[in-house]
Amino acid sequence: MKIMKALEKDIDEMCTIGRTVKYFKTSKGETIFWTKKQISNWLNSKDDVLIVAKNEGKIVGFILAIFHKPTGKAVIENLWVDKIQRKNGLGTRLLDTCVKELHTKGSIYINALVNMNNKPIRDFLTKNGFDKGYAFYWMART
Ligand SMILES: CC(C)(COP(=O)(O)OP(=O)(O)OC[C@H]1O[C@@H](n2cnc3c(N)ncnc32)[C@H](O)[C@@H]1OP(=O)(O)O)[C@@H](O)C(=O)NCCC(=O)NCCS
Image 1: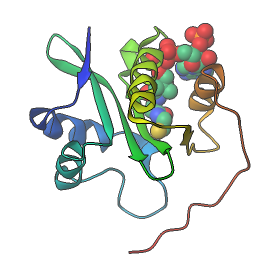
Image 2: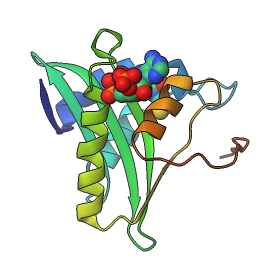
Image 3: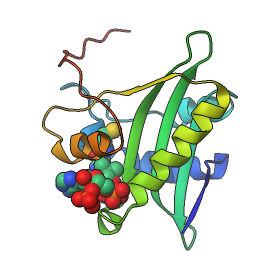
């Protein structure tokens, strides 16, 4: 298993996977994941952190984070581990790698928005040092 920075060549696979993860959906609309163009732009942003886990060349996990340098705030946007690899510590390894990288960049505050029905991710984040705050509605527009 290799954990590494995501590369341009990983984009297609990441997008294909991302579209299948129901917990990435934030509303009843169509959009469930980032476009290839968005991920490509994101990869080229030096402050952000996009990490993949690969097993025999296949992506089996990823974590995507945004870092806002002026405030030191980072957001974990997406975290995913392949079903057959779960409960084996890979999510924790991805998160640890991401947090370490964010701290190196100067992050002082890291948060994540989680679907209230997604107990695995809540348990996972609690176990990894995240405190639970208030529940909010997801409001969006273009
Ligand atoms: C959340 C997720 C990334 C965890 O990955 P993982 O590789 O299983 O995580 P780890 O093995 O490091 O798990 C560590 C802890 O997380 C919690 N956890 C993980 N999966 C869980 C599950 N299905 N149910 C309850 N708790 C779970 C447990 O506390 C676990 O500790 P334990 O093994 O001592 O019980 C994975 O379940 C996933 O990809 N879910 C689907 C995508 C998703 O919901 N992403 C979040 C939206 S951004």
